[in-house]
Amino acid sequence: MARDFYENYIKNRMREKSVDKPDFLAVSKDEIAQSIADSILSKMNYNATKFDPTLYDLVITDGMVIVPGIGITNSNIGIRDGKIASITNMTIHGNRAINDRNMYVCPGIIYPHVHLGLFSPFEVEVETETKAAIAGGVTTAGCFFGSQVSHLESFPELERSIQMRSYIDIIPHLVIGNTMQKRELKAYAEQLGITSFKLYMNGIPGIIEDIGDGFMLDVFDEIKKISKPCMVCVHTENREVVRRATSSIQDTMNESATMRDWTETHPDMAEEEAVNRLSYFAKKMGVHVYIVHLSSKGAVKNLKAIKADNPYVHVETTSPYLSINHTTTSSNLIKMEPPFRGAEDMEALWEGICNGVVDTIGTDNVTMTTSEKNVKADNIWHVMPGYPAVETHLPVLLHEGVHTRKIPIEKIIEKVTRNPAEMFGVYPQKGSMLTGSDADITIIDMNKSKKVTAKDLHSRSDFSLYEGKVLHGWPIITIKSGKVVYEGEKFTGEKAQCNYLRR
Ligand SMILES: [Zn+2]
Image (cartoon, rainbow, N blue to C red; front, side, top):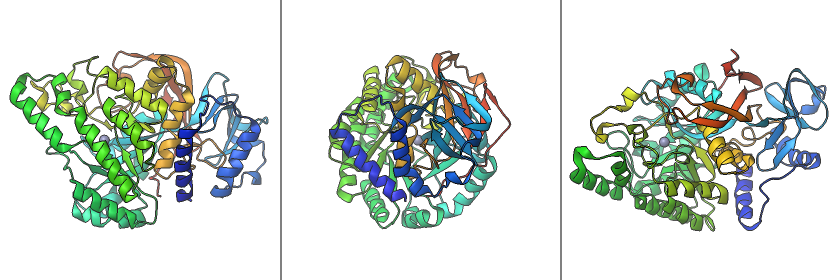
């Protein structure tokens, strides 16, 4: 099933390049019915007609429903047994009804890229940070897991923590960093149902080992032996270029280096060259790759040309890279790898969102406090890279993308729901508003304004990159597996049983 949808995804991407698709599409009832028939009911084995067709556990009426990849429609949603049981123009009733014609109703946000458990135990953060995610409208997260030992050994414990504590579903991505893990790729796919992996072309000295091209090609060879569709996520920077620039800045600036100098330690050239090389290998080997956290204007430009005839390359950027650059602040809080770049890079990434170079938007969240980040260190070299961003992700995209840059909301939503779901093999169970999909739903009020302050956010962290900033456009209700878990700025006390998504 997954392969089928994946192939459709590739075809659609190729088609998008040749056809001028209007951004805003009014969807008729017939089109939705057709789409349901085509893509969902026949594949998901869900029989919506065995119930009273007008009575549901929960109904959402009169909202502007965003069906990613199709458009926006004024339809009613019926939810039963944790699934979307109906999307219809008929009047429907439920044990509970949510009604508001001024709100957008969309699939629960899926963010493809977070790290949990780095500065405090995973079993702690899988609770605190996924709860914060729910408050930010996020219902599924792709989470990277590194391990010194075999993932077959370390993953079961993580799975237990997810089942016991997580408020959202998790798509695990396994970091492949040594020969044993490389040999076990097939076992990870077959035994654990995990089909997305991570390679670091450039790591973080002392924390994450990087790998060379030979290792990467060996991984691609192993991937080709796996019968399920796989995705290889790659941190894409040329490590030699980064090392050379870093030691040059350290030698000349030493203790007086600023955050602006930090940007120079990871030159644009490092990312530009690495996306070219990776894309070339991916096409040559026929392996799908997913470039994480794209940051530079030059790499956007390169990828625009590359993606025109290379269907193996998929691109993510992050909401922080789309909203912060080194000209807006020089605070140690923004130390990050790759670094925050200039205003032009930020606008180039938005252009990439509009023209299809960028497929998905993540956060690269690493939860840490100001003391764990060592923000007060007397020089930048002792400050840790990373930031928390789970809860502000969607509001930042709505504020910066929809309000400020006038990008249609359905375009943004597609990149944080359907696209990541398709790339990581969980569509249409996730990332869809059609019959049979999981009833993970985010309701958005584009007119709501709120000032960000870390103490109101739910992360265990004590800072936000957006402290004091007023953002327009917030999720106001989060529904997970048919349960209203967050509403009116409060957790309702309901919690859905969550798990990792086996593929
Ligand atoms: Zn990351």
